[in-house]
Image 1 (cartoon, rainbow, N blue to C red):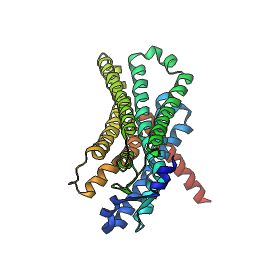
Image 2 (image 1 turned 90 degrees about the horizontal axis):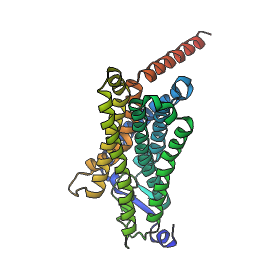
Image 3 (image 1 turned 180 degrees about the horizontal axis):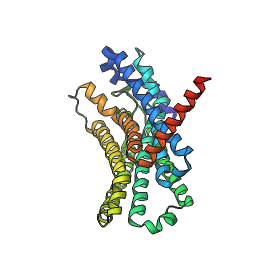
Image 4 (image 1 turned 45 degrees about the horizontal axis):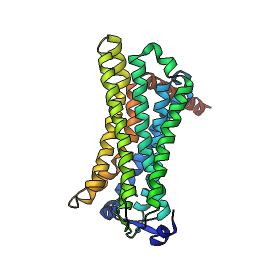
Length: 317
């Protein structure tokens, strides 16, 4: 972060909250309920996978990491959001803004990286079942896990590093949270480096989507050849497809709004489009996997019954 950027602006104003003035309390209550639901479903799924040794397989480990990332990303948004809803002044410091951008951006990139690994895991399991244990060994799985976090976190650092070198001349961000493109648009100098890197990162993750599409073409071809293949595809690939569609739709809405959003759109619609990828995927992903994957669902039901019985036993003494 350069001195010029620090001295040009100290705080940003989040103008998106201008549309929430008349219903702050209901929105706060609904958001708090939503965040509690996110914590509950993600922590429940993480504990179920961690505590059950029969679920210590690559596919379930990927799901566990997806839930951990959901908790990480929402932590970068909800606490500040709650504070702003209850406040009459909606500002965020320059440093706090860049930190929020980093957390939210890296969350989105890790989410997509994890979905790519899950599609690769399903491709190997269905298309090359005899080679699964060698191709998805503990060492290789650990390496893939590491890359799925390190690459997005590094990309996030690169994006934030370039943004921090810009001299910022404006202070109004027309959102409920800090977003990189909104900060870049406030720069009064050249932003070509940030724009080029942003396009490269976007293209890189677009390639992720292409890889997923190619893997599913092969998966469908293989699954149609046998009854067992169709059963595997239905049980383990459909949840992944639902989650992929959920995340992709939410991110596309945010990207389209950020880059090409119309000034004539109502602020409420803008706010909804901006926050949905921080609301729906963290809730729906663990719910989809928890309900659809039989092994996880049965284990969660068993653990819930066991916990209830222990609590009931304690209350009798």
